[in-house]
Image (tube, rainbow, N blue to C red):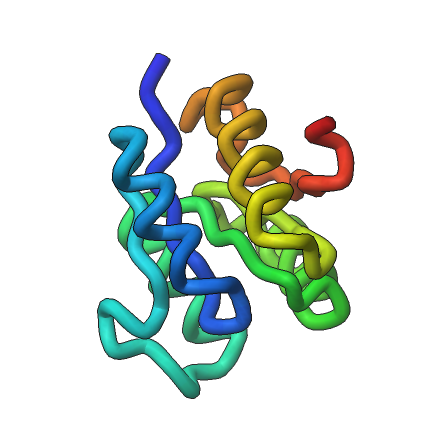
Length: 117
């Protein structure tokens, strides 16, 4: 069972990447890899190609992308959707998710941080 590698979309607080790396997780933020301003389609493709699940607050655009990937039988490493949360709560819920799922379990699924309490 392998640990989820994570890509944070540009709308996610950049400090989350730092907080998660301090706890041993492999996490990069869009700005750290010069992906700011890229389209959602490009962000998901980048994450998928790199074997990283993507965490985003952009539910409105990523749910249709997840459906498109499903019907086109394209694979991705997971899509994690999150409402805007207080920073500490965002860290806590993300850690809960990362601690409860493996790379294999999250692949090609959509998860919601709201379910991680």
